[in-house]
Image 1 (tube, rainbow, N blue to C red):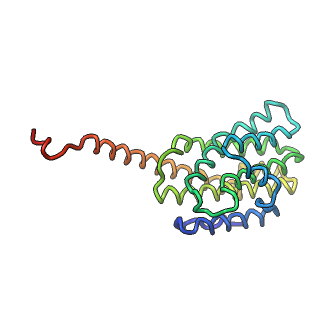
Image 2: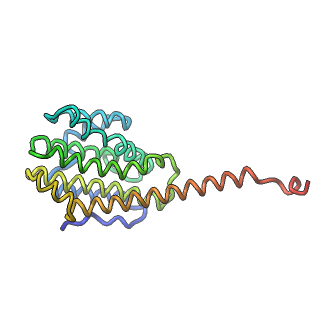
Image 3: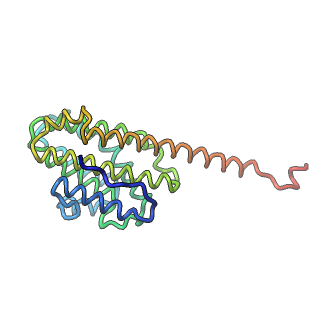
Length: 234
């Protein structure tokens, strides 16, 4: 079983981590996200809403009912918003041609294109996307929290794992195995293992963010309650 690139490293080599993840993605999917037409389209996006608009257009290309398409696209908001905020946190430190959020969003688009003409892809993708959405919903309220170094490292791990999940799913879709993919999703194969890792990573990030909020709150309270020595004696 192919393994996700190791991410137990410091912020000094974020670039190497993402390059390794992109190589692994290309190996699995035979797709270079940097040169894919979607990448060019996403590069001009200036906000998470711009990215969402592009991806929702891809969802609407499915020959499905409106309710089915809404189920596919409903997960996008929480996920893309968090990924976009994560990219802003990482800033230029990653050093990629495209921001991590745009790279991963291109991966979403490639997966949607691969699934478009595959039987049973609708249910399989909806199941996958809804599970990812649940993980990212727990992080939505923490995107404005100033990250610690440990939180930033966790952000990188989360983004790499998401890219890995989309790589596995895209590979299955390209091979026309949506039904098998759906069964794997419910089992203990590559996709299930990757989802379990993403679950743990997002839980840990949420825990660290909550702890950071508590520290910041205590710091503010200490400053508010502080008095000069001459006032304390009065």
